[in-house]
Length: 199
Length: 215
Image 1 (spheres, rainbow over the protein chains, first blue to last red):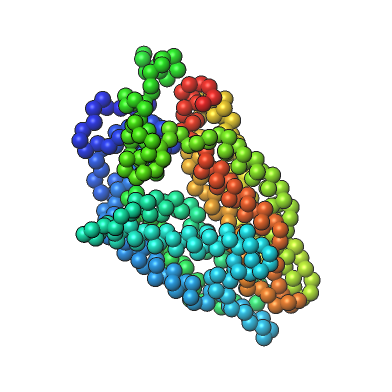
Image 2 (cartoon, each protein chain N blue to C red):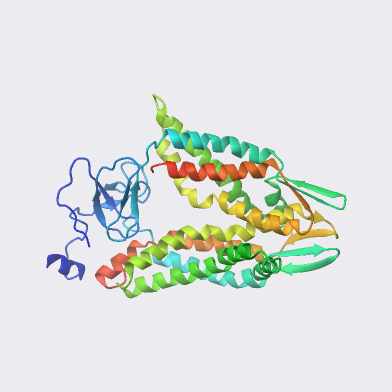
């Protein structure tokens, strides 16, 4: 078990480990470095090379991709003359139509509302920080961006699409719409934006 | 020697790294003392997550009860050429195996069956160890907490699959897919276990090990 230094230098910051509760001094880190808890190896801080501009660019891209993902066709199915087109929001709507509005709300929240709220929040906070007179309340917005992180499930949804797709091709002809490509891009860009930030 | 005494709970001294009543903010990480809200981000300060053990137990119990209908009831009914066939979580995996999609079957099995069980068993283990004040394998248990906390969302794959299939396969008797009641229970399990993992405070395991008794 490590012992804490008795005095902190001006550049040190005191941190409580979120996983084991050990108080410790984290020294000022150079960019792209990681500080871990010596007792339980939780990540205490991870610095980035470009902690504002890079995630801002990625989050703005994500915003554009989200607009495409919601407005273009998602998956089209054709079978013996019957055809059906779906959009990203068709799933939750269909669940609601079957009387399963609870599940519909969960799917809508985790695949559309939480992601778009996070993207908007990130753009707002990161762009706000670069303004000469930053708007008030940025910290509140950023807290929500972090709180919503586990509930934004674009990457999980894409795997669900993949599983659904494999079952559909056994049944009928499936056409992949632009929304799916946009969503795949959105996932990559969002993961990259989260990784580029230094919370 | 003093440290040893302190670790065994034989001294009254605050084991707070020399800063009396210091609290680290759960939201932004700033360490402060003497105020109720974080001076930097305004979040309510608390030594440990509020009522952590009781909340985690309650959420886990609810999740464990819902786990039964989630696996017994069909998550969807597939109608093909007039004949309906109900699908549960497990038969869904079987279908993938029968289609020869082994990697995908393994993935869905892991996400839909292994992960929920891992979360339930893992959190119960951590809770019991905390209540007993166990000091064994603290590092491993903390790592287990991090895994349980981060892997939980992947169980939603099946719910998303049902949502997509319900929306797209609607051709009356030729081919239709309807959601089953199992999907409500299953999404309930996923959300409740996610909330349970969030309300558990892994620091309590370290507190309990230090004092050797229930926090």
